[in-house]
Amino acid sequence: MIPGVPYSGSAQDREAKRTAQGGPSMATVVSPATPGGASPADGTSGAAPSLGLLQPRWKRVVGWSGPVPRPRHGHRAVAIKELIVVFGGGNEGIVDELHVYNTATNQWFIPAVRGDIPPGCAAYGFVCDGTRLLVFGGMVEYGKYSNDLYELQASRWEWKRLKAKTPKNGPPPCPRLGHSFSLVGNKCYLFGGLANDSEDPKNNIPRFVQLLGFPKVEMESRLLVSLPALQGDRPVWHAQRRGDRSPDAWVL
Image 1: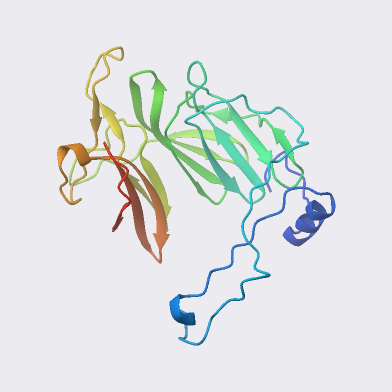
Image 2: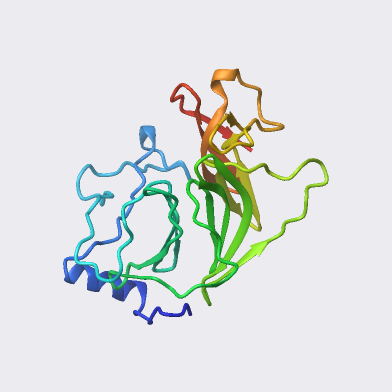
C-alpha cells in the first residue's frame, strides 16, 4: 500500500468505471499480421481482418482535481500501479516539485516527502523498481550537472541519497544530462548524455559522452541521447546522433 492512495478496486473494475463515465480508457495494442500471413510464433496463418481491430488512440484527460503541476519541460515521469509520479523539470529555473497523479481517481496530489530530499533537476534518469524510484544525474542549475544518485521509497515517500561503489575498471559516471537510465533485472544501465567540460557554470562547454566499448563514430555523430527498450533480456537503444536524425539501433 502507498500512503495517501485509497484502494480503488481491481483493474477491471476501474476500467469499466472509466468507460461508463466517459473517462480515459486504456489503449489496447493488437499486433499486425506478419508479411505473408504467417504467425511469428508457429508459422500458421495469422492474417488479421481489416476491420474490428482495437487501435491505440489519444484522448486528452479533463476534469481532474487536486494541485496540478505547473507547465515545464525536461521533467520525467514513471508509473507505480495506478500512480504516475512526476518530478523536476524546468520553468524559469529548475523545478524541485514532486507531483503524483492517480489514474484511477483522476486526481493529483503532493505527497509529504522526507529524508534526503534532492534539489530540483531536469533531463535526469528516472526508473521504477516496484515502489522504489531511482534518480540519477541531470541539470541542477544552468551549466551545472549532477552525478548524484537518489532513491525515493514511495511506500513511505522517503528520499535517500545513495553512495554507489566506484567501478573496479574505471571512474564513476561523470555529471551529465540527457542520458538514458534503464532498469534491466537488478541492474540500471546508464548510457550516453551530455557533459559540461567547464568548471565555470556560466561558461558552458558541452561534451557528448563517449562510451567505452561502443562502436567508434565520427565526431559529428557522437551520441546525444538514447532511448532504451528491451528485447528479451537484452537492452536495445535507439540512438539520436548529433547533427542528424539517423534511426540507428544498437543491441548490447
